[in-house]
Image (cartoon, rainbow, N blue to C red; front, side):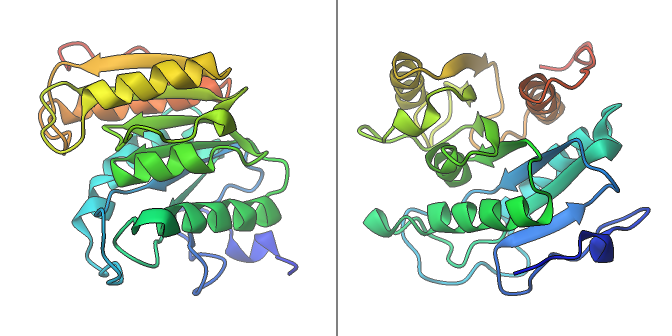
Amino acid sequence: MAVDAAAWRTAAGPVPSRSRTGPLRVRQLPEQPAAAVLLLHGGRADSLRPVPRLSLPALRMRPFGTAVRRRPWGDRVLLATVRYRYRGWNGHRAHPVRDAAEALRELSVLVPGVPVVLIGHSMGGRAALAAAGHDSVRGVVALAPWCPPGEPVAQLRGKAAVFLHDRADRVTSAEQTWAFARRAAAAGADVRQVPMARGGHAMLHGARHWHEVAADCAAAMLALPSVPPVPGHG
């Protein structure tokens, strides 16, 4: 399906998604985007209920988008989110992975050839890692990701992957994250592990440091200029 990208551009503020039925929700679309950042929020292990309009996991990702926008290069980056059909992962059906893959396909039509970084939290981190094999994806920033044993890693070969996790997380396991990261590195991924001193699963304590590190990692993956971290945070 042909897309008139100019129809969605705006000088300031959010823009509507390309489709009201597809999972891609575009929040910022520059005239000539140099790169794209796609945010994937958390969810539940099992649920076939639709994601509510007011979704706390989705709201938690907004400051990560703000951190990207505030970078010197932020106005040159397409910023978008994935709108899941269901709240849950749902076993072998892995619904969020299907949604992420469809969003990447939509994105490649909207802005062909633009490199993409995925930033995903919890279940969204798992979905981002699983969908990273798409040709447009440069890398993944996985925030307190859900990485159960046996997850595939071959799709990360040649990709960058940064894992941020607080060992005190009581929802997802940092040890499982580090084990996944080691397997991904062995499979040919460019891996960096970042143990976070605080934050828990919701990344609330020291939240600004989580936001800044994620934005800097995205910049490095996209070869965009970064800025030093803010002193006194983290």
